[in-house]
Length: 417
Length: 91
Image (cartoon, rainbow over all chains, first blue to last red; front, side, top):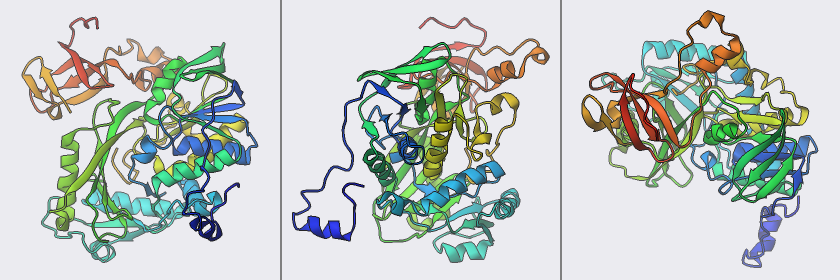
């Protein structure tokens, strides 16, 4: 890799006041034709391009991004990574990603600040207890680390949690995945962009796709704001805007796009050294390295592309946070934002071919796509390169909505959708 | 977040309502005669429009009546509200 980062390059550049670092990726104009084009320069799209170049030797490819890379949901999520899903198909998919996360900083030569601080999922009623215990058993059968904690152990693991049994949703226990944690979301996009660029991938920002040209049932190219680009393979990784791109190709997807909000507090000294999620009250919290509490709220219950979200959703989340963590009652919130998430009826993603030749979709990640970024890119690259799914994403095909073989993670995933 | 003019109750906060998704999807008259593909189309496939969309809403914490609404999903601007069974307005 040109411009390798190391202690030596750091020292060398210190002598020139850090003014001679090379750009981590280029800013090329689009060529007339590519072997494959990835639509969407978020983490998943950049990872797809990276693995297409690295593992499938496709170097003449481009990533088109209508804004700037990592400016969509990659830069808007709460950075939680875990793989404790109930069903075998999901467990395989998300643990594949988690295994890549564990060595990703080394592989990319880019510090993505992956921190395996553990993710705890709380149970607030008897049904939660049964569901979460069942999930720990299912996880362990799939080789995924998971333990059940009783109320006292929850308190020991995260001392600031209020375990009073007199609150509206008392803590009755929880599950813990110790290999789970967080990563720096921007760094993930930047690391993959740098890695892909080094292998010759064109990353084209401020380039919006306006149309998809077909010849019969084969794609031929893309109309973009930077002109027409010819290609036989298009991989769409456009998250909330997947349906918009699909409509250009005359395709309908089983998706609804909704705003999902998150917010951060003013920065404070370290107070919570893990990630705590609560399904029943829909509140999750962790602390960033800067000291901000990172809080995830729920989705708005209607289709919208506004990247804002409703105030009452944030209010509900903060009420729950305050009941579980009374210590936060006087903290001020610093920033709030929304991202548009594409939700499937079964709350599982689609990594699939379509009935149009050369058109592939990686979408439907809903509220939980960040954790899957490396695995999603790897499997989508495999699907595009071979025109066949990998065995790990075979279940996540578009045809499951016709066959009825859904991967129903709605209640089974650790957080409500 | 926005204000919705319920055709029965007048202007109320959006948080009082629940959204029923895309409107004017007609339930097939003979479900048993559909192919799996046609059934999937009816049950799951959605236009999910960015722009002007026709959709169903229910005043869940109010009169609990269903009605239709025309809303621009790119900016949440509401263009029209009309009762169930009424002809959709031309936008």
